[in-house]
Length: 464
Image 1 (cartoon, rainbow, N blue to C red):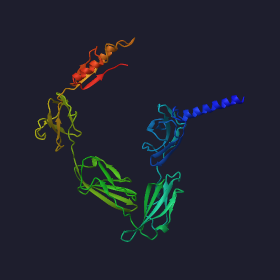
Image 2: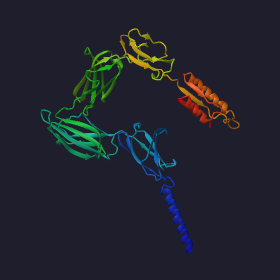
Image 3: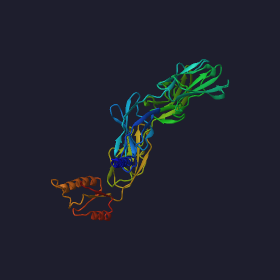
Image 4: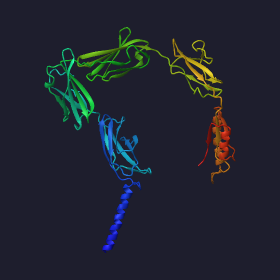
């Protein structure tokens, strides 16, 4: 009995040893079960995904579906933790994340759990009134704050003298957030000319800044970035961009024409605006950007010229690879009449009106222009090149002598040739020379013929 028990113990030991080898050595790539551990929103729409490392895995596939099971994201990764910006994520929507582990045989195993998560926009700082302190204790509110974990605030004091010269820059306080209301006591700034910089951080990453002012106005002034002052822009939608001021509550924008009349106004909290083309015509314009904090405001301006511009003429074909007799079409993205010449002369002086495709039989200098009322595009020159050598294709529809098919499908040879006939007809219509193989030709014969005739492309048609 003791001997039998010893034998059983030995057998069990061998079984467990083999199981260990199979599961963990990689000799037999069996994927073990695993779990998705966390999906953490780090900042904005960036998330860190973490799951168990799977033995015998070669790589992982991560998928994200929305609440309707529509696939929104799929990515191949080689680590069990990664950070990714999911720009498609929408606030208050629920998403489902799945992870699949793959071994070297491309066999897969899905994680034991599907991880559901949603997205809340990042916490930001607000104040109950304007950003002027007036020598009084004030409170900052953390809007959207759900969990105080990982958030902190830094308070920096910038002190100025009566000439608005910075005389002190000091970090005066750094606190871990414990609620959605943060007090700033008057003792830090009372009766002083101070700019207080309040910075909100999440895991040591800056996510929002508010500037507060005591006995002074903001020192930072607006600046228009685009359109540049003194520039000339095309008559189209105007992209206005200006420096984003941390203290500004809103921006008022005025568009002034050359007569000094305000022709349009708008208000925005963003530092980028797309102004509709219909507001402008050829001429000079000024855009004023007024930044407001309560009743206080400061202004930046840019003056620029708007001009109608006609885009050049484009051709429909690759100008370097034309065949003799090929037709090309001309087109423009603007309204107007296209004029052209094919003798190298200026199309503005005696050019032909384009009305139908142009046939090209030799190397040609094509010059084009678009005229729209009293303005025209730049003259565009195209050097059209005719290929000296005809393009050739060899159609080899398998080894036809043996290609009789299998019962009941014994018409393969005929069908293959019908397909080849259709291809040949299409190619020859494009001035491409076509060669065909004899039904007795072997592949060695076909390759020899291609080499002898300097074939550009061999197309082998096969059935399976």
